[in-house]
Structures are given as C-alpha cells and as structure tokens.
Image 1 (cartoon, rainbow, N blue to C red):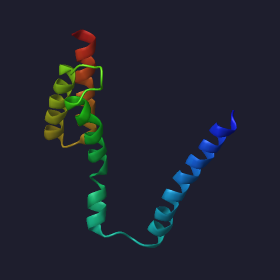
Image 2 (tube, rainbow, N blue to C red; image 1 turned 30 degrees about the horizontal axis):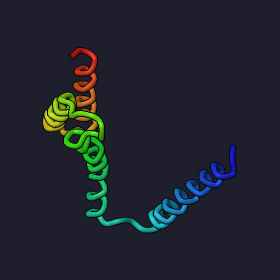
Image 3 (spheres, rainbow, N blue to C red; image 1 turned 90 degrees about the vertical axis):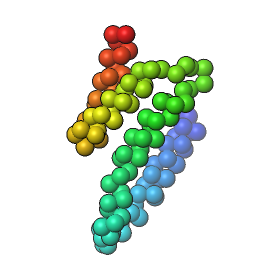
Image 4 (cartoon, rainbow, N blue to C red; image 1 turned 90 degrees about the horizontal axis):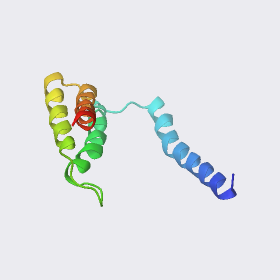
Length: 104
C-alpha cells in the first residue's frame, strides 16, 4: 500500500470521526426539540429523491433516456402512495426497472 493511499484512509477516518463525534457527545447530554426530530425524519426521503430523480430526467453523458426509469418512478410513486412506506416504494420501483430490463 502506498503512502498516499494510507494517508488518504487516515484523513478520511479522521474527517468521519471529527464530524460525527460532536453530535454524539452533545446528543447524549441534550435532547433536540421535536421539530428537529420531525425534520430529520425526512432525510431518508430526501436522499432517495436526490438519487432517483436525476437519472429520470438527466441521463449520464453519452447515454440515452430510458423509459424503464419512468416506469419505475411511476411504480414507486404508486406503491409509496398506497403503502405510505418508503422502503416498499423503493422495492416496487426497483422491481419494475429490473423486470423491464430482463423481459423487455
């Protein structure tokens, strides 16, 4: 392993530790207001949207738009609306895209 890789790993470990440690330290001593907890509950949905919406409308350079993504997004929206569970919405969208790619 080269020195550059080793220093990169050490630096990334320190950055991860130093950004998470204060939250763990202060979180054990003080509680956050309910409004903050409610806002943080939307973080997974925000991450899911930021990962799934750009490929739907903005394909990677050199690639064409895929109707499988649109079908998956519609399926995910329908399952999410019906179940109100983000996990099952993701499973439904991924299942439709996988089925589309395998069978069509």
